[in-house]
Amino acid sequence: MVKSYVVDAFTNEIFRGNPAAVLFVDDFPSDEMMQNIAMENKLSETAFAIKRDDNHYDLRWFTPAGEIDLCGHATLATGYLVFQKAAPKNGQTVVFHTMSGDLTVTKRGNLYEMDFPAYDLKEVPVTDGMAKAYGVRPESAYLGRDLVCVFPEGTAVAEMNPDMENLKNLEGTLQHATVIGAGEYDCVSRSFAPKLGIEEDPVCGSGHCHIAPYWSKRLGKQQITAYQASPRTGVLYCDNEGDRIKLSGEAVLYSENEVNLAI
Image (cartoon, rainbow, N blue to C red; front, side, top):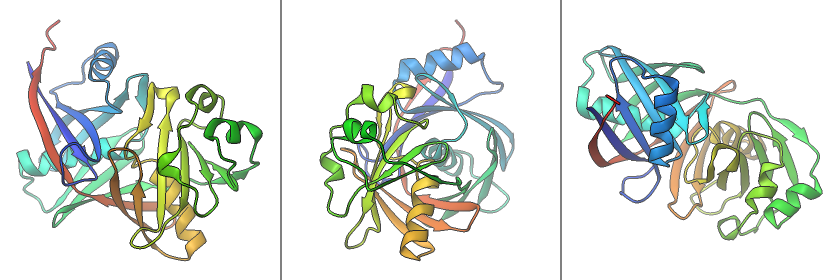
């Protein structure tokens, strides 16, 4: 039996933010086993971590439809658990060895700051397929790993009800809808992942490795406060450093249980 945790990331309230399951294991189970656990959990991501020393861990992430190369909220969740449960001895930074290279999580007060790669965005034509999928025509679109559709100011992104089958026909691993924000938030976004077996990713860290650089450049601001307008909601504090982006957020433990790996 292996301990399994569910942490709500990018929030300080349970039932908000993005829930991620995290399992600390001595060795990675088979890919089939990790995939089955992710499908059983039915969360956006399930993370598997191996402790190498007090400040270094191997980390992998699985969606219900397969392994993914980068996940923000599950990394934040894992970092939160390391600081809460393992008490790193060498400072306030933990390093995770991943498919996307070494990713750090640094505890800064109530926030957990992640140092991630920023995606290069290529502008692509706005298509009728995008308008059909979202029910609103974007004003522009950009492609990195994911597709980012930028909507006209005032578009009610929170009220969108996109067609998942049509989203599957669009480019990108995930599809993000974003609009300029107001008040304390620089941008408002939602993230959809039907290709990964998830209709909506409640708060997407890797998505903001696309979204935050876009708004940083457009607004001429290095630091962006981003609001995710999913039903669960969440807030990300983003610091654009060129080819890297620092994403910060809070986290809270929702549950702790055990998973039977001896099957």
